[in-house]
Image (cartoon, rainbow, N blue to C red; front, top):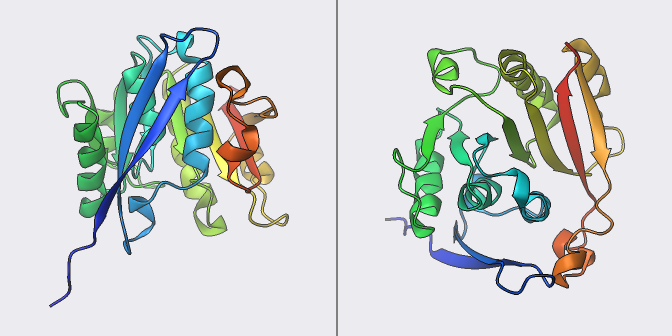
Length: 226
């Protein structure tokens, strides 16, 4: 009989040296020897720090997180006053359950304060219309396999077209210089801006190299050309 994976809880601390009273602790459960959606990949803390440093813009925003997994960025947005809908593939019920577990560890009541929904990239099912209005889409390390790049962007394009002025903020780890989404952005009438992350964490006394953990990570802001 196989043993259940062991859970360990990782603590992420967000602070600001300019205001000592502003501090946020987030607890993320991870399952050892489990699949990718049960682990906090390096892109997630990078996106979370970007959100933290722009937290004044988050209260009241309607946020949709794609491929939430352990859900660090979305949880930070919720703790900073956003109305967050977390999503994972509808075909991965254990991943959806783990996202709920992350919310519960951070005192976010599912179906009251936040929502957790099944959403499979590239499939236009009825649950896509259950999302409701969106101001911000989040995604950390969604672009990990070129085979799914178009599925992600066609889903993002649909949501952005349904929500005028909405934007998609995504972090991705550079795994190959041959991988690109430029042609897909053009195909689906999207445009992207690269954010400078060289000073990320500077106001909190955190070294940017510590946040990146030795990886090359980029942050894109994507919106609709229409």
